[in-house]
Amino acid sequence: MILFINACVRSDSRTKRLADALLSKLDGEVTELKLEDVDFKVTDEEFLKRRDSLLADKKFDDDSFALARQFAEADTIVIAAPYWDLSFPASLKHYIEHINAMGITFEYTPEGFPKPLCKANKLYYVMTAGGGLVPEEYGFGYIKELAQSFYGIKDVQLIKATGLDIVGADIEAIMSKAESDIRI
Ligand SMILES: Cc1cc2nc3c(=O)[nH]c(=O)nc-3n(C[C@H](O)[C@H](O)[C@H](O)COP(=O)(O)O)c2cc1C
Image (cartoon, rainbow, N blue to C red; front, side, top):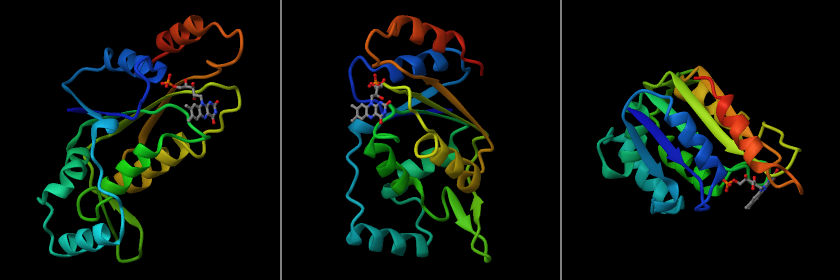
């Protein structure tokens, strides 16, 4: 199963367009999770207490861990996220707070290092950016570190189109090139 985590917001999203071009090249059933449609609980103290208690009791089949189980069981992960404020939309961070459940997506060794529990061996991160200054460390770089260190997904690939909001940019040319550059 390919899990498509869709953090795009706009109805004419360029990031979604690029992600669709990638998905059309991948083999396998695609399950889309549109983050905008997920009614995330606020990660407040009550939420954390309940979660800690469920995890301590190894109640991994609780409904609140459905997203974490889905992530852990996927064969391939595709994340689509527009480049926002050097990073990505808050919905994606909220999602990560929900799937980082100890005992489901990862656990810790006695020495304090994460030990991955996920099945996937490939993660694609698809993004588009408006400008030309697009450092990767707070968006793609952060997801890559999580994927490799916590989830055990070593093969992490960035697919991107940038400069889309620069005055005079040939948006169609940039997007077409990004689509034809996709290698899976
Ligand atoms: C809230 C917000 C923050 C943004 N921050 C950045 C940014 O830091 N750097 C940049 O180059 N573009 C930024 N942009 C522009 C988007 O990255 C660009 O328009 C992108 O293609 C949007 O993707 P979409 O078409 O999938 O919505 C921002 C756009 C929005 C709405």
